[in-house]
Amino acid sequence: MAVADRYSRLVLWLKVALPLVALAILSTLFFVAETLDPEAAIPYAKVDVERILREQGVTRPAFGGVTETGVAISMSADSVRPGSSPDELNAVKLEASLKMPDGARIDISSPVGQVDAKTQTATLSGGALLVSSTGYVVETDRIMASAEAARLTASGQIIVTGPIGDLTAGEMELTRPNSANGYLLVFKGGVRLLYQPEP
Image 1 (spheres, rainbow, N blue to C red):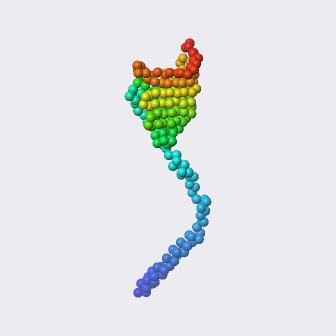
Image 2 (cartoon, rainbow, N blue to C red):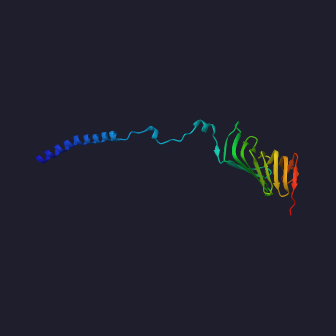
Image 3 (tube, rainbow, N blue to C red):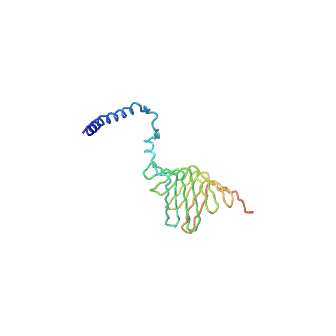
């Protein structure tokens, strides 16, 4: 009977002592805990939410298609953002490629450009570079490209290097004459050619 009495007293004592010990440990945690410095909190990236919303866009977009005349056109950019109208896009590092039915290819690149989805035209500006598979390289400030007509135009200072020599002109146009099967690259506006015959 004495053993049972002692056991009951021990249980009763533990019921009171253990919660008090737990409370003391918990209080100690609050007293000993290090004071937090709000300035030393995990740093968050400083972002301008308004600028992000204003500069909505797409990175590395690409699209392509084939015209009625069989020219395969592809276009890509590092990024595009909405322009001044709903149909206009402003592009960074714009690249366009035209592959003709006869296998000839023209690649155009520029630091910036604008694409008009309504008229299916693109303006490559800021120093456009045109490279053709026939060996011609054209440098000019701006090149206008029409995806629907597979037509290229440029005006201003045009510098051309190619198999026949160096050429400068004020205007350039790449079109497909109705009577011809291929495409015709025409230079106009004060054309000067420095002919370099093959040795």
